[in-house]
Amino acid sequence: MRSSLRPTHRVAKAAVALTGVLALSALTACGNSHGSSGGAGGSKDGKVKIMVGGLDKVIYLPAMLTQQLGYFKDEGVNVQLLTESAGVQAETALVSGDVQGTVGFYDHTLDLQAKGKQVESVVQFAQAPGEVEVVSTKATASLKGPKDFKGKKLGVTGLGSSTDFLTKYLAVHNGVKTSQFTPVAVGAGQTFISALQQGSIQGGMTTEPTVSTMLAKKAGSVLVDMRTPDGSRAALGGLYPSSSLYMQTSWVDAHKDTVRKLSKAFVKTLHWMATHTPEQIAAKMPSDYQQGGGSALYAQAIKNTLPMFTKDGVMPSDGPATVKRVLSTFDPNLQNYDVDLKKTYTDEFVK
Image 1: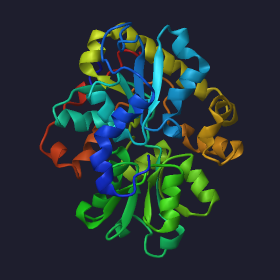
Image 2: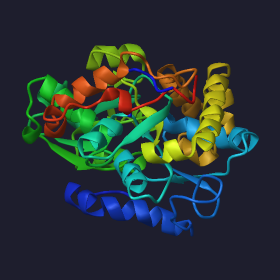
Image 3: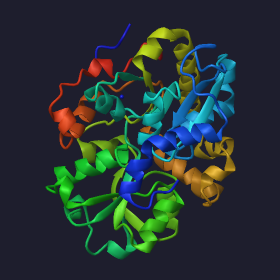
Image 4: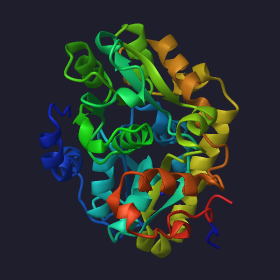
């Protein structure tokens, strides 16, 4: 029963032009077929393909960790994890039917509904964004908070991504129009840090482990910290459900047994995370996810982000309303469309 109650880009223009192509190219590079139905409730080759908006980002850690722990296999579901640098590209792969699920931010479910696409979160990984607004070391004198965004170039993972959404909210909420600053798609990891160091952006929004690596390299400092529920409440006025597994509602309705298995595997992972140390979690992850920072720094990045995760995959009761309020602050689509929040997620498979 449904709950009553979502490659490095140098310039923003190029990011927009390549958004659709990138989602397809990742799949092609893996040598996969692109069916959206058939075989074991997944694609034509029997796999359930899940696109992640950055597999090495700590905010999406449950995706790879579930695979590393063997929980997909335990539940009898054949999952293939794919990755893109930004959530908006992962969203594109889902809407185009190239994958069956996306691990990305819940807020995309509201944005898509306003655009006539019905998708829903089936497992809610997190109750806070896990995002951090940072300022480069070179720009600290002129950029002390969101009120100083005017005239600045600010890094986001991709245009139309959740980092883009939240940057716009922070600007508008602090009296700066979205037309008064320039969002620049710079991805995450080293591409983000290089953009800070080279001065192509004065600040930006990113996640762990990029934040900890940036601080270690003294490339910048923190302006707004939303890695915890308290940080989310301070910056956004409430809990902001973010990373989740979301899928097209029509596919969910037609493959409930598969969705139930996926959900069970992810919830087992969330529980495992809640009962193990950051060091134990880090040890289970691929070493290249450390982004060159080393195991200790990576464990610290996980520790900084762990409070954002739920323990049961259930949507926070007040979360969807916060997301709707935040997006409606700057998004004309949401301002002119009455989103039906109860259609943007379900707790049916996690309860």
